[in-house]
Image (tube, rainbow, N blue to C red; front, side, top):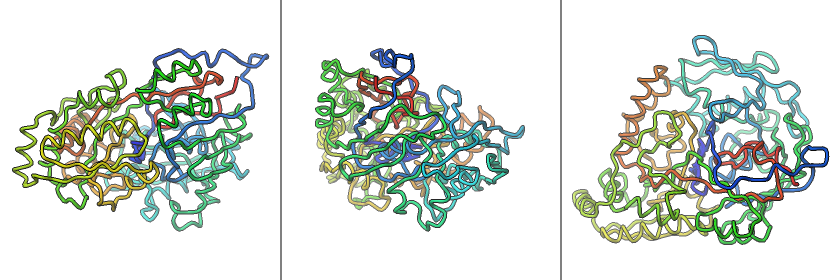
Length: 542
């Protein structure tokens, strides 16, 4: 999962996020994306020989500092975006079709219990060392190592047993599954190998200082990082996919959306997410193409059941707070119209297998909200919501929620935080000093990815939700090969998550990206959930 509310969603992903972040949020993998809106002429201008030009730099706006530059731990949108350029994946999936990167093939056995992965030959890390099957095996084993605390671990545990990984030869890796698992390929989509020779002696990889100067295998290699200002990557000439066109890519950290919009208009940033409220202003410059596209993302209000208020662990309280809100009004306040957001009721996103919106939904009933609060002994609540400062959408949402809660006698204090501090707070599983947060996640096309969000004690279960029956169903769904039975399992999961009011779904949102017309290659680079581009090597300056 990859997730992100600042943009996995840990996970997500984030998983989502896998990871949402949030870092929830947070991530993502294997999700298909569609582009709509203006048609770009970005690919029309090339060098005189008909090929894209080489040279130049690209500046991408991001909302915060990355949490960690290591794909085994990246769950927030910013970390995932930068990691996508530094660390190459094994393969990706778009519209059901695989695109192989480090891998050349992935072949399942007839019984689906063994998968054989073949790597490309002559792969190298940014420091010139060879990338081999040893690195893939090392990566998976470190994900599985409980002491290393990777949020991806649960995806490699099937019915309580770990996937076994072994090296066959320098370019061949074998995975043995304890039972057939239809989600296994979706799990591998999330893996970008890390170098064994860098991390093999590190006791705690997540906290290793070696993440500060990451060594990857992607199209761009790490050059410089100034906290709170920018991260610059430079071209990796030996990239297996061919030498990238750009000399460098800089991620400029602009935490306030107003400042980011102004920097975009002034040409200080070439690529950035755009709030719906700013689309017309950016279009008016005639310098950018606008791409609204579906990321398979859910924006949601999260209830922190671990907060020191000790009231949000009550199902009736969460239902009551949900009843206080009006989803149609919230979408209008947040996104201006339903052009950028679709109605959401399920905790699973629209693009995932077995999704259904036919689930319980607590919405727009003030009297019912008051009744539930009274029966739960929770009248006169004082709650706290955290939001990243400068995020227009979340600011509008928080003020709306504050007013609606007031109507049912609940006081809501809004804590606007530095976006980097907000990310750290959101993913801190021990944080008790807030009650609610607005986030989002992108989890990919297989529902097994949601285990990291909603299983008891999972590393990305930021709401601290626990339901043993849901745990059991999620485990069963991961290993059920009969599609009809699997669909029934995940329908039940969605119904139970909804009835428990684990979150309040706000909308399935569309992401809007502004892309400077001076650049080409966007179609070849592929617009991708969470990370913007699947392969930055294809972008070029006209």
